[in-house]
Amino acid sequence: MEAGTENTAAGDMPTAMAPLVLLSKSNPVFGCYMFWTSLLVLKMLLMSLLTARQRMKTKTFANPEDLRISRSPEVRFGDPCVERVRRAHRNDLENVLPFVLMSLVYVASGPHPLTARLLIRIGASARLLHTVVYAIIPVPQPARALAFFTTFGITCFEAGYVFVCCLRFI
Image (cartoon, rainbow, N blue to C red; front, side):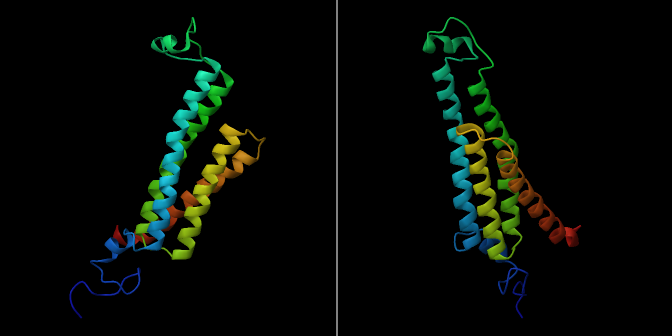
């Protein structure tokens, strides 16, 4: 057997090639990851525009230099609509980033393809739903909590999976 061609957990790929193949468009799991990550990043970027829209709509500006745009006489804070969107955006920053980073490491660890794709799809969909029920069409609890804990649980599972896979390297 040639050097670097022994079998790995990723299948019958040579050891030296396994990470390159796992993180390539030819891997359907990585393709799934790229699609859903792109969607989540675009959603997070749109949250900034939604915040700006709410500020314009309610004439709530936190910076004196923005008052010329609004023709508002004073800086205002605490509008409930603006604050709701800001909290949803902050929640994204606190939860989407760990999900996206942990999912990348999880994909690189060579998980079962069906499981990985389901986890990525469900986790990303839950984050999209979280934004809808928090910032766009507020829905009473437990809708927001269910969406939050779905992605939180998936991120924890992925972290645990990678942790166990990597124990042999410490």
